[in-house]
Length: 140
Image 1 (cartoon, rainbow, N blue to C red):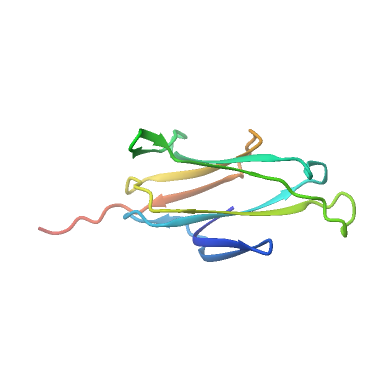
Image 2: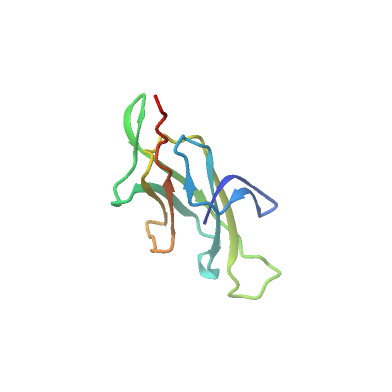
């Protein structure tokens, strides 16, 4: 997983603009998350569900105001990959995914974490932490 300014997938490859940052803001900025998932040989040909959750430094869901009230910042999707016929048995298959996000109203001067879960499971290294810069105080 990689934080970036923008990204897209073409022909199974990730095309990344402004990738690898961990400091943003303090103003809301568009961003993206690029993912390359290695799907095990025995997990191919099966549908998988993925979810990304934005958490604060204490592991609580980050909430944003919507017309339906406060909602957690979450993104979900599905993927399924075929076993490539030209590779040796046991070879993992690549899945590339991109989530482009509009500007999120995140509190300045705070730490946040995107956490990934696949089929309800997550691992400590399936996370992307970042910090928002403190707000700049203007002289009066």
